[in-house]
Image (cartoon, rainbow over all chains, first blue to last red; front, side, top):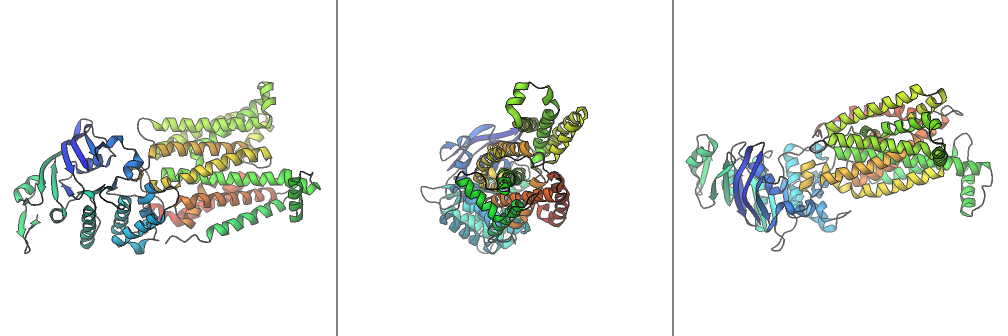
Length: 257
Length: 350
């Protein structure tokens, strides 16, 4: 699906991402973790196509990302950003419908309406449909944006694989909805979507990720597969803070910093 | 809750019809509905107007009101486009220097046409002022855009500031022209800067009408992309919009339509600022609805303003710009006070 080959990004000689390689297939949920300024968001931005790498290249479905046209790319991948500043009053449903804009010309087809309704139901925001987006709380807004991104992914199949990029998708959500959002993303994986997310909560990452990429100072330090156990040495090296691992009753570890 | 706009378009349509009919009927001479129908009937059958009222209706009142409607619609849609593009509710069409440039172009003609090449003046005739105004508007906007482009993408703040600077240059140019002008010329400049529809002709109606129709169809095609821009520039790109291309196209559309409208009727302020505001309150910011709604509302309000211009001091005429500013400014302040909450979350200052 996406093949990141020895990619670097530098601004004014400052290296933000250094020689990162990554290959993600549809069905895989990859989480990127690391301290502030590690280059996570920059890497994600390069994978979204918004930021061309200064070195190396990224292939999406075998084709160089920089050769995609903006509207073509919108049908291949969707991005959930960290912040949204909405400048004008507009209904939550229309925001979600924007996810379908790349797929129709002037007026939404019945299929688009159905997808929008379905995604809003999945994120449990259907009752907000007619509300002005600007009156929503931070968490509600985030769920509406996630619905929009899910609508942009649309219906996927063997021949129609997509990429979903999430930049700190749970930052404004309460515990229940943090799990709900990641569970929905995980569901997407089962339907030929490759998901790459930047997260800050190691326990959420352990629970949902198939692979965790630890970044520090612009480089990937460690790629941790699902069956590999996380160790306190690794986490202490990455985050510079003492931590304890607690065994969970059902198996697995819980990290306490 | 955003109010449902089920009844908005029928209501706007009825209002428009009522305003247009009363605007035609009222004036220095009153025209009855019978005369309107008779005149239309004669016109269709290529007959001369039956009486003086029918002639006034066909040759003076009707082109004037049509030009008014078209200009109002253009200014309102242009305001919607600019505010949408810059994600900022205080942007208005005049900001890019278009009207100041047009005013300077027009003042050049008023003062210097006496010393221009006689053949050119004779050839262009009544089109001389519009041609110079159009060129002035186009030139000023091009200067604003080029200067604000700099090295990276165009930002609202630079554009605003450079717009202010170019506007100031345009104004001082116009001021200088007034200074060296003889009295009647200076009066022409003043009147032009306040806008008037008193000289409306069918030719002007055709030219602005064709430009307006073309521009409206195009701007409706950009409605979806303008909506996406509400999310932010980067997010709009993720959603498939080539934002740089969109900016360029909307700027060109906007400059063309404002230059043409201003060229014939002079500077009319506040229309492009207030109508999009009011319509946003009524239909929300979905441009698929906002553009047509603003178009009709612009037509209604400018026709009303022109009616006021003709009737308030009849038989004399008040320049329409005085009315739009006098009524528009307080409305604008009230709206701003009442609705600042709507805009407080998004600054759009990027």
